[in-house]
Length: 297
Length: 175
Image (tube, rainbow over all chains, first blue to last red; front, side, top):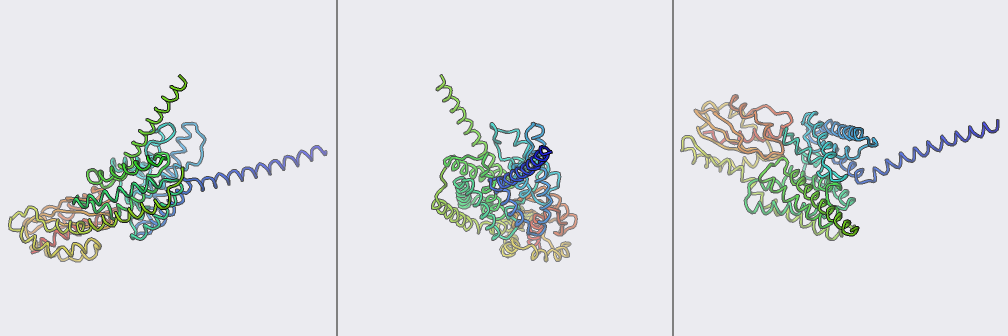
């Protein structure tokens, strides 16, 4: 009898302990996510998107935002299921959904929003260098969507539809995340090059160059530089590389604005810089392999 | 990796600010002058003699063009009167106009024949929305003989730009 009582007490204690461990684990994983760069960027994007909605017709953006986030989470879940990976909450899917939803115009039809996010995330899993995606997923999806279906972009999360003073919120949020992920050289070089490029174009009387320094283009440039250019897997970590990355992205963006498209010039610049980064890391990998081979030989 | 020193951040931010301000100032007269210049330019006056008149009228129009960059409400008012007069109120020729707001600008070329709007073409579209969104509007202007076009759902700002551009062109065509 005593034995039975002791056993039942032991079982009860075990269940309590396991419940407590589960609770702590789940709490710590949520806390971990909130403190992680992706958690911080998600929170900042959410805040700037809420502020960015306050313009006439902006409330329609909520629908697209929710849809794009759900599509992002679902696409990553399906990819994890197909690849037989653990099915966790996809922070990458959340961030891509928030970025795409905040850039596409609220008037873009629901199926185009879903298409853009799905293409972004599918290509993220296909175009990879080792485990890292080569191109910024949101930028790639948006460029494809804009090229194939001329999907409208309003960059409303970048306060492009609000009064100019609202850009303060965007800059504050941007500084927070850039400081957290240590990407100041990249962002500052991009913005400096961007401003000087269009200043020189203005001095040379290149038509339309002034527009790149005004709303909504300047908001788009700020949004891209803070939240997309700094994406850790697709941008370099070393300072000298960050500087060239930012410079290259700004120059290509500027050239694309003048010669290619005013709708997706920033995306073109960012993707070109992503390509350059992938090329550099490939060369570094090759060098490292050669060094290893020489040593073992 | 150690973080960038705050001094460097402050220095770079100041440089960005200065470059932005310089760029803004350098390009400002041009952005407001572009629509005015575009309006003043009657490219191919069908009757030849329109060129001079067009340039004169453009000088009068430039302030209104500046106003139209901020507000489409003020430029809507002439639309009613232009609709009333378009039977005989327009001079033959080809006129250009621009409309600009926070999402970019739209330029159009309006051709008047026998006092009527014969054709409307979008010559430039620098809005952050694709031009295809407002591609159907020129035919509406032609069929209605007026700048009162329907708002395109999801491209209201582009529609406003287009409407302002057509109004600017039509105001030059008035005798």
